[in-house]
Image 1 (tube, rainbow, N blue to C red):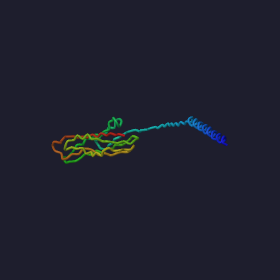
Image 2: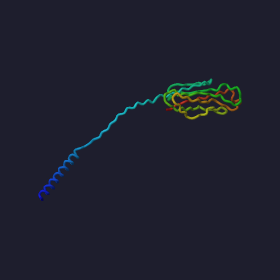
Image 3: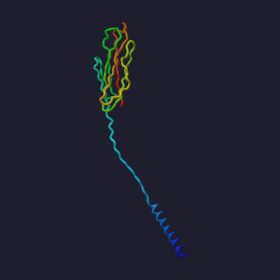
Image 4: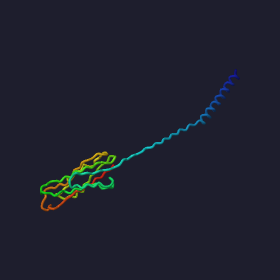
Length: 166
C-alpha cells in the first residue's frame, strides 16, 4: 500500500508538472493583435458671397463693382438744391441684398465729414446678418439746421461704403 500511495503521488506530481508546463507554453505562445482603420471622405462646399446695392432715391449713385472683398460697393448721394433756410433733410434710402449662397454680415460706414449746419442723416444699425437672398433697408442722407447767408451756394454729399464678411 505504501508503494501504491507513493506512485500515486508521484504520478499525480508528474501529471501536474506536465499540465503546468503545457499551459505555460501554450499561454506564452498565444498572442492576439487588434488593429483598426477607417477612411472618411468629406466634401465641403463653402458657397459664394455676394451683395447687391440698389436705391430708388433720385440723385443716388450706386456702385456695385467687383467681389465683396476687394471690390467697390458704395452709395453716394448729393443733396439737391435747397430752396429754404429752414432746417430740414434730404433722405436717401438704399437696400443691400445678399445675392450669394451663404449668410453674410453686412457693415455700412459713412464718409461723414460734415461741418455744422450740415450733418449725416444716417442712423447706423450696426452689422446686419443676412441669409442668402435676404435684404436690409438703410436710410441715410443729409440733414441741416437753420441755414444762413454763408451757406448760399454750398453743396454737400455723403458716401456710404458697404462691406460684407462671412
